[in-house]
Amino acid sequence: MPKTSSADFVANKNAQEKQPRWLYKIETDTNPLYLTNEPGGITFDGNLFRDDVPIAHGGIGENIEGRMDRVQLLLGNAEREIQSLLESDDGLRGKKVTIWQIFADDLAADSFLSWDFTVDSVSSSVETIVLDLVWQGDLLSRMVPTKLYARKDFPSAPAPDQVVVQ
Image 1 (spheres, rainbow, N blue to C red):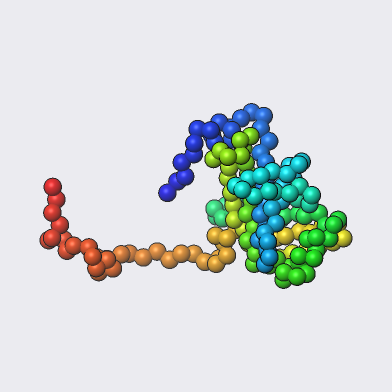
Image 2 (cartoon, rainbow, N blue to C red; image 1 turned 60 degrees about the horizontal axis):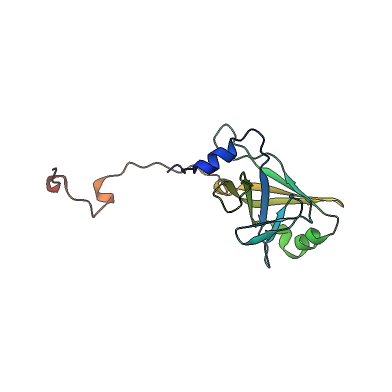
């Protein structure tokens, strides 16, 4: 079922000069990390998104098969906070990462897109940590089989001679 968007969302998304805000939530074993690259931080959905850890990501797009491409999330490692999380939390592998793209100045409005990813692999250097994210819809990497359904698959369905057409 397609998502219906409010008029506010469409107007903000299609504005000529609008830089979207990016928010990131990284699940950990203890407390989730809420990060943004917005100066001063942002409060969104009751959570304070910090700006003290530099963060960025590669583009979010689809491949020719309609699947989400892998996304690389880059985190600054100057304070070593993220490095200590990697060491204590199995490298964050398998942890959920949510990315929001917000178009409105009013953060309470329904003017955002969001994606859920899972950390697949991690690499780190002295200055940067790279989380390789995979879209949660691709975790199984399987095609869903199709099936021809018969009436016997739905025991509550009436027999054809019991159907009343008005």
